[in-house]
Length: 568
Ligand code: FES
Image (cartoon, rainbow, N blue to C red; front, top):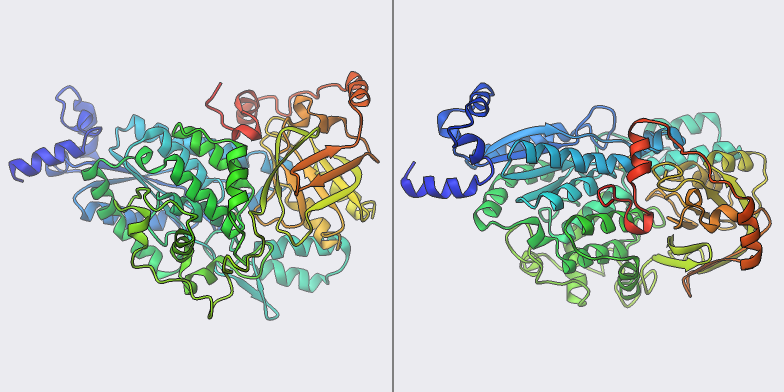
């Protein structure tokens, strides 16, 4: 190695050189020889490869394999790739509050674990190989905190399943359950749907939370172009992994850091893509948290402003027809970004992990063809003129709430409260036929502290859909909704019931208005009456006595603040 090369390498290994170059670190050096490094490797930059791979979930089952491709690409580029694992929790397998309470906390555990390993082991850069819903925001929060060269590799979307000629995905399985509850599906067909919905590796296939976060993180500039578009089993995914080494070397050489990329404008680009693609409401929570990790001020008002200026264009599931896998044929997320950029909706001068700006990355991207494809509508004929995500305020949500209004269900709902303490009670009510058209189902004590962990209302929304009530009732909660949810739903209500928010004071029969035109969530009960009800309200005991959920309850901020746990 020449003198020039040695100097260049030492510059690139600014963290790991503490271990590998200082004579006072013999144990660390002995251990690095012990894992198979040779003398010529010792001055090379070390790159931590954080894999959320584990066997128990299709979204994550292939990630260790992808991490191995990444490692090869890293090593072939003259860097040292070192794989470590972080955790994952499958939202599809959490089963009600008991499991789902761990889902959102897992995001922060992922962030904490990546931050811990990369910091403690002195890695010069980090690649996150991630798949399921909380993996991506967790990794980005760690990357934001660490501010060392970093790239995210998305595990990729799943292919669709099929039964009796019908395309299926995970939401088909949830909705089959709803139809079973309602008695509108045979046992044989129920089994057929369950056994055929998931054909292999990959994240849930609609524009649900995983694909929402992957698409928008690509738009934010933190993954290579097409990372969110290549399905998990597509050869392009392995190719992407192999290219990561060269991309990381370039980031190191340019000293291009996450905070140079994840700027205010880049986060706006991410949220613009969420709106245009009809992404999950969970993105609001996650981008509030990601923005905090890089010190960018972002509020619910900012999210509303982006929604106000961005049309909803994509006919993707859950409310539309197509799957994420269908995006590949029409030009993928880069195609959508190029169109949005051409319409002045995307900031083109933001830097990305390619070392080029968004506009430069898009230079050779073919234009969307509005003659031959019908997944992405032109701005002249949108599904909705503004974004589907609406931030509502009112006496039921003084600090905000997040609604998903695609326009298909109308923009205003006025109805009568049917109160459910926890989601299980709503399932019971559906089974007994007690949920009627015109009801506003209120599911409370499901917030960040009350749930705890702000569970997603997967079963309640499926049960309502299955009972054929999807367009006849509304659902409001201090919990969250799955990215697969459609219908008139408002979540993330803050302050949450457990903290004494007015949601805790709602009674059966109260009138509630959800107005997504004026962005209001209003309980038609006077302030005097609410004050009187408050006299008899007793705060429930903590929802967990010990362990990780107890820690979470103590640390977590409100949904309107992104549910972060490191700002106390
Ligand atoms: Fe992993 Fe849906 S359960 S993406």
